[in-house]
Image (cartoon, rainbow, N blue to C red):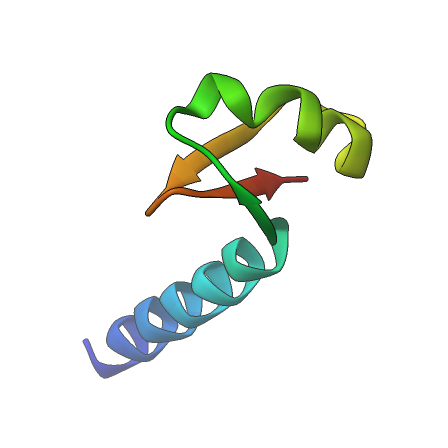
Length: 60
């Protein structure tokens, strides 16, 4: 049981680290996620962006 819990904690830690690397913060202000699509396409080459707290976040 202890080996499984160590494995689970390691998996969780690695997942959080990988996900944080995939997110790119930009200083562009927005009111909705649709405003971030063209901006993120210029940065990452993909139209994957989200408006969080009136700032655009792009994803790789």
